Image (cartoon, rainbow, N blue to C red; front, side, top):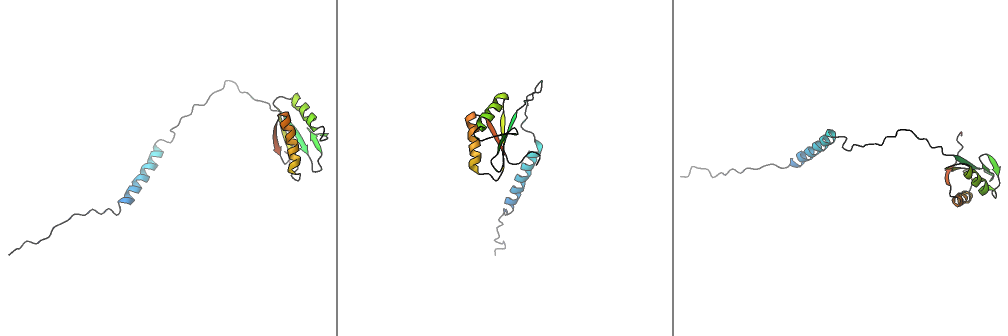
Amino acid sequence: MNLRRNKKFTTEVSTGSLNDIMFFLLLFFLIVSTLVNPSVIKLTLPNSKKSQTMDKQQIVVEVSKDLQYAVNRVPVSFADLETAISLEVQRTKQATVVLRFDNSLSVQDLVDVLQIGDRLKVKMILATKPPNG
């Protein structure tokens, strides 16, 4: 008579929730590592003994709806526009030409004035509205 039972115990490890646990641990360590050392890069900015301000002179070229040109509020014709701009550029150092164009004008009108600036090697900025309006 065999009184012993034939039962063998097997051990199992449930790994179903192991992925969730590893994800939360990874997330925890990522958050903690960013909070521990927030300023890793230290910048050394240059210091200046004296402050320098550069006066950039602006030359305003205005073009109205009916193609009336003006350089610094002085009316000129399109034929004389290049000479008027070149005279103003010669008077000032580091001149920047501000173009105030009406938004109803064609692109070709803008390109004509930009070509003048390109020939004179002048930096030009386009503005569509006057500064007070």
